[in-house]
Amino acid sequence: MRHRFGLPIGLALGAAVAIGCLHAASSVEAGTANAAESAPRAVVATTSVKPTTPAGTPSTTPTPSSTQTTEPAGPVKQAQGKVVYLTFDDGPDPHWTPEVLAVLAKHDARGTFFMLAQNANPHPELVDQVRAAGNSVGNHSVSHPQLPKLSPAQLHHQVADGVQSKCFRPPYGATNARVRAEIHRDGMQQVLWDVDPEDWARPGTATIVQRVLAGARPGAIILMHDGGGNRAQTVAALDQVLTTLSARGYTFATLSC
Image (tube, rainbow, N blue to C red):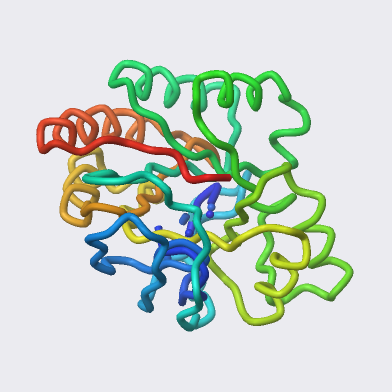
């Protein structure tokens, strides 16, 4: 989200997590790092996650997110078998989003792009390109604020006026009961993540690869970024991750957004 240009959402669905476009949390309708999932249903785990860097700003020390609790998760994960869900926050970016798409196409893989409206609105052709390649699109707010700190009117704007989707990933993974209620009221499900390699901080390609591979398991939502700054390390790491996970028998599905 940690985002990041965005997150804290490899978290699971339907839960709230501690995280602060890193771009950290658990599975569908919530999510948190390293929650084991053997079945492809959306289950929420609880844990801490690292926040992502806001869209359009340089990486700085992340701010801790709020603590989340387990909630029932909806059918955001629908693929069966040995599958992981690659997600990309803080785009679309005119340079990095096409590069991410090219790597996905090289491996015949698909992912879910959680977009900021402030980036998507000026580049509708990129949104179309993402969807045309078989990927899904999620709502990552309008401008990447800390949602729990907003007034009711500001919160509604950030959620309701984002890109059209059935999935919403709160920036930094920062959420609470009020934020979740707004997300549901606007017809979406909260989606966090399970695996957060903190690629937004550019720790090095090898480190990103190691962190993703260490956390990958059937049903895991993996958080990466296609926006918010230079994503050369992410693009290089993605290529290696897809090669290794494919060799391990994994496939790559989109979230039902």
